[in-house]
Length: 214
Image 1: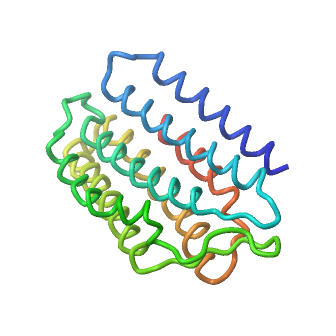
Image 2 (image 1 turned 180 degrees about the vertical axis):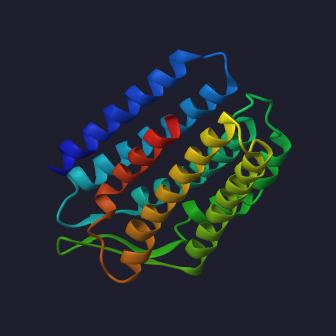
């Protein structure tokens, strides 16, 4: 059932990205959303490969590393989207580059495995024990997220009373809703020892992206 759910999410996401990109491939907004969808598909694929086909005893270091990396790239793409939406204006790439600078330090930590002391299945049960570097990585992730949301909030106030304000509001709602669901399923509950929602967290991203695209 899990494999079917993740595959359905993947094909739905692929169709969504294709629809938005083909509708206006020349627009920066559509291309940026297409990049976001591409990263989402990678997120679903790595979950499908790990959660759908894991062994009774299996190391999950590769899955953890890719999850952290894709999560950061998703936030950077969202920040880029916030720059160009809804005006289809040129993005301030310098700002995106500035927010990317911490990756120079964090990426080596990530691939040296310093973000966790254990990740994988032990006696058929998934376990992951994070280090302080992981929480630093998570803080960085949320800083980028909040920067994108603040950008959209400023635009919402500027366009208040116009159709653009409604479009911006729908994006903000989708991002906040998705972030909240992912925080609960991938951060809060695992910290309390419950990992049951982690395999299906990709579905939350799909739900948010549907509002995002609408």
